[in-house]
Image 1 (tube, rainbow over the protein chains, first blue to last red):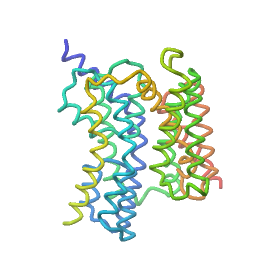
Image 2 (cartoon, one colour):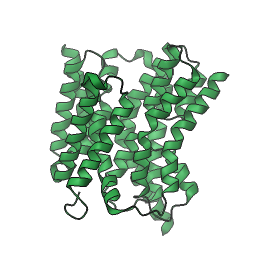
Image 3 (spheres, one colour):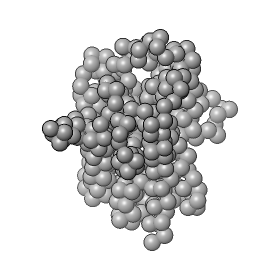
Image 4 (tube, helix red, strand yellow):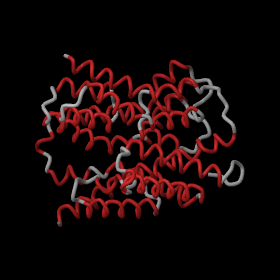
Length: 239
Length: 101
C-alpha cells in the first residue's frame, strides 16, 4: 500500500515538473552553445550541468572564464549567486514531512533550484512527501542535462529567432505560478508587487549600480517578505 | 584538468546553500512571525525573479518580444490555463513579435 502511494507521489512530482522541464530545455541548449563557443571542452560543460546544476552559476562561470577571471573570483561569484537558496531551502524545510531523514534531505537538496522550489512551495499540501520532491527533481535535472547535450551537439541548426523566443519560457512559468495566487490572496498580491518594485529600484537606481543581480533578488525577497509578515501577521488572513 | 577542480568547487558552493537549511532545520519549529515570513518567501522570490529580469529574457534589444510574451502569459494565467499552456503561449507570443520585427 505504502509502496503504491510512494510511486504515485513520485509520478505526481514528475507531472508538476513538466513545465520546469519544458522551460529548462532552451536555456540548457543556450548554455551548451555558449560553452562550446567559448572553447570550454565538452566534457567540462557536461560535468558542469551534471554536478553544479544551476543555470545562472554555469552561465556566469563560463563568462568569467572567458574574461580570464581567477578561479577564486569565479567560486566566490557562484557562492554569492546561490545564497538565495538559503532562503528557499529554509522555507522548504518547514514543508517537508518531518520524518524524512537527513540523508534523504541532503539528497533532495541537490535538486533545489528557483524553479523546483517555487513549484513545490506553491503546492497546496501542508506537508510534502520526499518522493514527490524526488519526482520533481528527477524530471527537471534530466531535462537540464539533456538540454545541455542538445546544445553541444545539435543546436547549431536551431534558428536564432526560435532560441531567442524560448528564453522567456521560465519567466512565463513564474508568471503562471504567481498570477492565480495573486488573484486569490491580497497578501500575495501586495508582497509580490513589493518585490517587483524593490528589485526594480535595486536594478535601475544609479546608487545601487554596484549591487549584483543575485544580491538584488535576495534583498528584494527578504524586504518584501518581512514587510508582508509585519502587515499580515499569522492568523489574520489565509495565504 | 584544473577545470575539473573548478567545476567541483563551484558544485560545492552551489550545494551548500541548498543543503544546510534543509538538513539543519529539521524538527526546528520557528516562531510564528518567522513562519509567516517563510510562507511569504516564495511569492516575494517569484516577484523579484520575474521582474525586471524578464525584460532581457528574449535577448538584448528584444524588449518588444519579451513584453508580448509576458502579456500572453499573464492573460493565459488569469484565465487559469494549465502551466504548460502558459509557458508555450509566452514563447509563441515572443516568437511572433520576433518574426514580425
